[in-house]
Length: 553
Image (cartoon, rainbow, N blue to C red; front, side):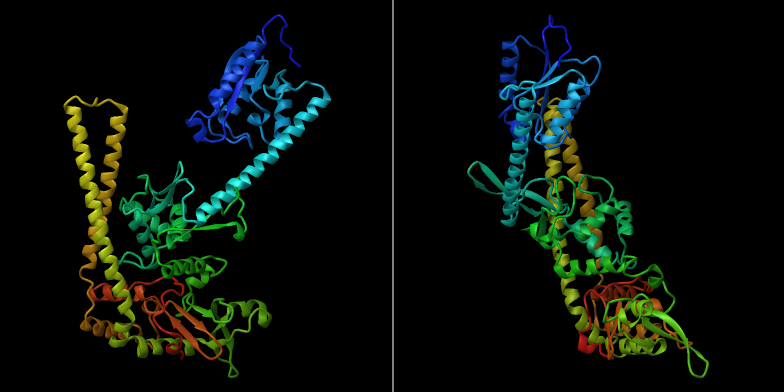
């Protein structure tokens, strides 16, 4: 197999590998492999020309830097060594197909793979034995992986963190010690938790000057106001969308959702749910998911969301959930009339949905009359908004607590920086020392991020300070809303209506009108402060300000 001069010593390269970074850090097996490999080469008179050390890499695939560097060197001409020495074939590969592939790749350049604990010849019998051992190594690796995964799943179900970086808004803390192992859990990180809450609030309510924001608009909002990511970077669409859809924030972290190798989604039965402290209430989370779903083109086409009619985009069939779209027809007298009909029924007929059709003018009148007569009464508004106002007060208290924590962190960072600078001035610490520079940079980053968050929270508290709701404010809002919702020619203002109702469901005998309490409060405050109502996009059914029996027309 080797083509080197027999009078020249065989040149050997050592390949050493351990499975985990922890083993590498604690010198569990690499020093032993090195010692045995060097002794083995010396006893045979082999010249050791290079050593490749792989610290913390699995042998189930070839995505290993040192392995690839070794293969690249071994396939150059002329070959820099004659044999590759490993402790066992499992150090080289645990997949029998991949093992044989690379054995043949090395052989093409005159290089032989040798195991110091599983010495083999070149005859067919020994080749078959090597392949059988590789099969057993692969089986053992897969069984070990299954056992480790079962252990990690159970660890997650018990509420313990398995490692990796936590989602933004959380931090890892030591929970308890079991033997030599320290079990860890997640707790809410006060420095970034409010950013997560802000993203949810912007998506459902907006920032108080406009309607609810989309994912792209939220990323722009955060970046323009220098609200950085956890790493001090800029926000992107994927990061915002991940926060809006991650169940971790309602206290249910999903572990083992995808295959480690091909990233394919795993069945729900294999997913482990880990309990964590919730950042967002389930009602808010469900509202966000419903709105995200309603904005998908396959669910609600763009033309429906931006149609010119009063209820287009917020009117849905109660039977199938499909959008009610505008259709035209001719009456017996030859006149043209317009009506809302279930889009599923219009496309597929009654086999798709038996949803009803209703004249446009009739449904428009019913919805507006009901809002005027039921919703736009001061006592009714006070009842509807009481729970939202209470939640806002709770949020204000939470913000004040978070603000105190941020100020504490700012003071603490400044004090530590001061002590470091004093040490540098007194000569105790070298200003060019890399550890000192990294420490100063880290403390400045924490201080600046905390200051930016504190400024944002103070601005939010200041803007909300004048949002107290009085009886006179409710009366004035109800009167103005009744006036503005109607046009002089008998029509209706589409944008004003959508500030009050975000979803209308049409059934055979009734229509149900639903809206967001938070949107209603935001509109009320904006009107009271002299702002004008703006056009709103399509909202899903979120917090219902009207029970079903109170919405029957």
